[in-house]
Image (cartoon, rainbow, N blue to C red; front, side, top):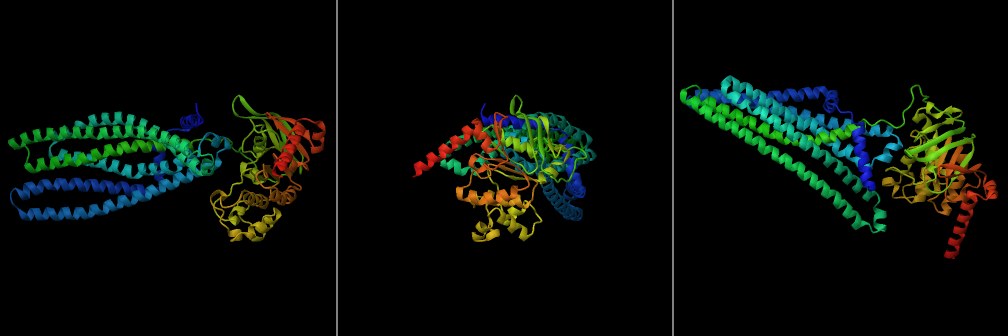
Length: 602
C-alpha cells in the first residue's frame, strides 16, 4: 500500500471512528442560534406556497364565472385580487431569499470558526495522521456545501413540500376522487427516492474522499514548488494528479448518472398521474359532475405540483453530496483531542526549571517504540544537548517535554510535580521553542515578533531583536520592522527567518528553552552572531538543544547521545570524548568531513 493510500485509509478510519451521527439534529441546533431568520424564512415560504395555490384556485372562478358566461366585471374583480396577491407574494419571496442568505452566511461562519477552534485543541498525533488537503476541504468547500444544504436546498425542499401539501388540500376541495388519483403516486415517489438516496449518497461519499486527495496534492505541489522544479518532478506529479482526477471524474460521472436518471423517473410517474386525471376528469365533465374551470384548475395544480417534485429530485441529488460533506465536517468536530487537560489543572505556571523524565516510553504506532524507558533528571538552569542519528528520538524527546505529546508510559515532572497538573496553555506559555525550519506568518516582521508577546512595547520588540543580533539586519531592510515577510516568510532568507524566530522566542521570556536544530540551517557567520544571543537567553534557564553540528554544543552542561530511543551516553563534551564511544565517533567523523570539505574548496 502506498503512502497516499495509507493516508487516505487513515482519514476514512478517522471519519468512521469519530463521526457521532445525528446530523440533522445538529444542523438544526446550529440553525436555531438564528431562530428569527429561520422563522421568517419558513413563514415566508408558507405564505408564498399558499398564494401560488390560491391564484390557481381563483383561475377556476375566472373560467367558470367570467370567461364562459362572458362576465368581464367578474374577470376584472378576480384580476385585481390576483394582482394584490402578486404584490404580497413578491414581498414574501424577498423575505425568504434574504433570510436564507443571512442564515447561510451564519452557517459558514459558525462551522469554519468551530473547526478552526477545534483544530487548535487537537494534538500533534492528529496532524500526523491527517493531510492538510483533507482539512482544507472540510473548512472550505464542505462548509460551503453545508450552508447550501441548510439554506437554498432546504428552501427548495420546504417550498416544494409545502406547495404539494397546499395543492392537495385545494384539490380535495374541488374533487376528492381526482385528488386521490394524484395521491396514489406519492408512495411510488417515496420508494424511488429512498432507493436513489442510498445509491447517490454512497457515490458522493467517495467523491468527497477523492476531492480531499486532489486538494492535498494541489496544496503540497504548490508549497513544495521549489523542490518539484529542482528535481524535475513536474511530469511525474502531473501524472499522479491526473490519475486522481480521473478517479474523481469516474465517481462524479456515476453520481451524476444516478441523479440524471432520477429526474425522468419522477417525470414518468407525474405524466401517468396527469393522464389518469384527464381520463377521469373528462368523463366527469361529460356527466356534469365536474366543470371546465375545475378541471383546468385541477390540471394546473398537478402541473404546479410537478415542478416542485422535479425540483425536489434535483435538490435531493445535490443534498446527498452536501450530506456527505456534513458527515465529514462533523467527523472532524467529533475528533477528541489526543491530549486533554485534567479537571482542576493549574492555569498559571512559573517554573524554576527542574525536569524529570521517569521511566518514559513513547510510540506513534503500537509495536514501534520511539523512546524506551527514558530516565533523565535536569536541574534548573542546566543546558542539555541532545545528539544522535536521524530517527533516534531526539525531536520526540523535546516534543514530550513541551507536551505536544504525552508519554505512553511513565511520567514527566516539572519542579517535582506531574506536568499534566497544569493546563497545556499554562505550561506551553512558559516554554520557548525555536524549530529547525523557522516558520513565519504572513505579515510584517514586527507582527511576527509580537506573536511571542502580543502586548509587547516597541522598546521590548527592539530589545528582543537586539539580543539575538537581529536588530541591525532588520534595520537594513527597506521597511525595517514593517517589512513584509511574505507567505511563510518566503521573502526572507533562512538566516533572517531564524533570527526573527529567535527574537519571537526571547520576547516571551520563557522559563524553559527548546531549540530543535536551531542553527543547523544558518551560515557560519550568521550562526556566530546569534550564538551570543542564545547564550544570553539560556543563562539561568533550563534548555534543551538539538544540533547536528556538534561544535556548537561544546559548552553544554550535559550531552545526551540518543540512539534507537535510548540514552546511550551522557556527560560533558570532554568526558564523552575520553570515553571514545558513540559521541566520540560522531564528533571525529564530523570533524573529518568538515576538514575534507574545506580542502576541496581550497
